[in-house]
Image 1 (cartoon, rainbow, N blue to C red):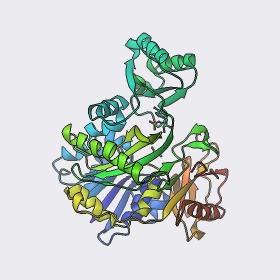
Image 2 (image 1 turned 135 degrees about the vertical axis):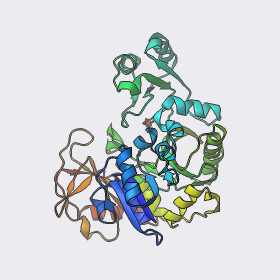
Image 3 (image 1 turned 45 degrees about the vertical axis):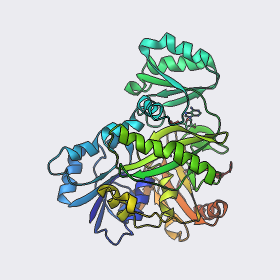
Length: 423
Ligand code: AMP
Ligand code: GLY
């Protein structure tokens, strides 16, 4: 069968790499893709939110399954677009419909969902500009630090954590009154601060059955020791060493099960990935956020640890037979280190030639922000490439990635040398 993957990052290259190993795959397309996906699939130069162009490709290339990488098209209803179109209706889409995608698209929606289904999360209240004074009062009732979250999608920048009450009030005002994040901050969720160590759990569901995929821990800050600005993710490790059986059982019983059951009770059809961002407070897991897709760079460590034919797994999601699948996992640890453009996550230059990555044989090179420029592979984004390695423990795996990174060169290349430092 022919498959179309929507997206252009390391996540999509990893999914393409995995699906291309399936004997059942005839032809793989990625829209818009990157230089990495171009080497194993056909890139189609269309945007992930251009539903009409996606329709044309799906029909002309005889696509039988669509896998949606990023959240944006899901929150904009790409799955519903397929279901409402006579010619596309029977072509399965991996990714939730618009309503359930609100789990990521609206923090307020996600909070209400968790409260309704008794899923542990930080206490909160939400406010609009009309309730500014009341919101100030709520801030005054909390202990610092103060956690402010723009309700809508804000390109990963919508969460602000401040220690000072007056700064928190000023930030709240700028979000609500001055529309700091546009429409996304017309509602702001103010939350209790949770102190603990973060990890993520990934669930794949067909709306009925589900599989818990490997755990991962992401390193979001640009600087060593988790300092500096937030990024999309600078590296990841799977499995998370402190997520032992007792803790995973709690996550399963208190969070994963009620989440999937809650979707059913609320009549929110869901075929796709659920990314649950968690924090371990004492010995207990609490949910920080839901995402309705895989993480990036978490995908680069989660997917290589799955041994199954992933096309079969996704077909089972489409057909509602996921309960019949037995997941087989690689017991080794996977690590990935993200190479980024100098300056990222602030301004950076693109178009720098990347060399040396072709010589790497004992790590996996997943492209993120790259493109082909004639015969050269050049940088085309802040996050450029993720170097994934597998080994008996995560430290050995990391060593392999760091050894191989020495072979790679591009102008102003930067990366974190301390992934896993806190474990
Ligand atoms: P999010 O955009 O929801 O992933 O939030 C970004 C980051 O803010 C998370 O990865 C956490 O590090 C932090 N964060 C969010 N909510 C809380 C909270 N209630 N307490 C402590 N840290 C939080
Ligand atoms: N690495 C975090 C994310 O994908 O949102």
